[in-house]
Image 1 (tube, one colour):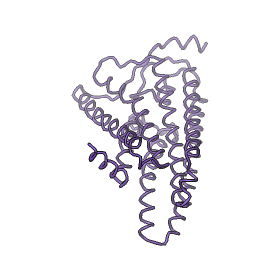
Image 2 (image 1 turned 180 degrees about the vertical axis):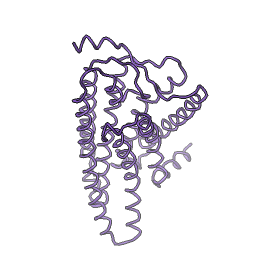
Image 3 (image 1 turned 135 degrees about the horizontal axis):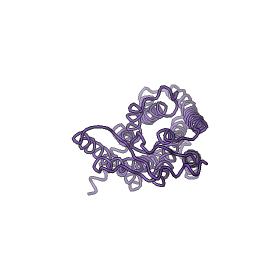
Image 4 (image 1 turned 60 degrees about the vertical axis):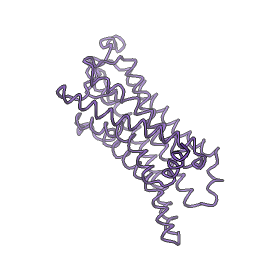
Amino acid sequence: MAKANHTLVYEFILVGFAGSPELQILLFIFFLTVYFITLLGNLGMFLLIQIDSQLHTPMYFFLSNLSLLDLCYSSVVTPKMLINFVIESKTISLRDCAAQMWFFAFFVAAECYLLTSMAYDRYVAISNPLLYMVIMSRKTCLLLLVPPCFAGLLNAMTHTVMTFQLAFCKSKINHFFCDIPAVISLSCSETQINKMVLFIMSFTFGGLSGIFIIISYMYIVCAILRIQSVEGQRKAFSTCSTHLTAVSILFVTLFFIYVRPSRTFVADRGKMFSVFYTVVIPMLNPLIYSIRNKEVQTAVGRMIRRK
């Protein structure tokens, strides 16, 4: 019966943001500007790290992967949203919706665990500075990419397969992309299991990575307090503060979207939080890591002087 009902809907309509044509144009210009800065910042950061040999360290290895992830998961959502601002038909096929959901679920879960790997990298750098390059070898860095990839694949496969096995009897997605809760709400099948799995996986993935990050920073703080000089402590705190800022922004916004009682969810408020972690955070990360990072600023200066 579920398979028969599934044919009731052949494509979805992304409602996006309500408003007058004038407001739609303003929103298009705003999000286009943000997306351009995101592309420029993340692609620039990635290429800078690849080109400048002095940035070929474990810290910047992970930072280049973070830039790549931000570039990818922003590009999964933003181009379609921009197109929908300027065309009347805001439809998306079931296949394209499933693809968007799969890639987005993969990249966002992978980023959470990549930030965990980066926290471990900072712990090793501060607690064992003399053995840092030995411990964080190329092999170790590559192994620390396994959890992000595994978490991303598990998250993407689970939610996409479970969601698109449902029967859909409504077609209007009250969102600007195929987010999991928004698509599930269109189903006329029983969705309690889907909602439970979404909550459990979000809480588990976010909780596990959050616990690892907290433990890493507990050890980091202890290691910093053992540093004798005030200047050394200041530099150590400065090194970690950029990563902690990026972690806090991402995890807080994801919590409000996926780990919250469904009865307290307001669709328009959910869209605003979604804008923040799908569009704004990918733009902020390269700014956070470059503005407060003297090594990146110095590398940019070297690139400019070469030209």
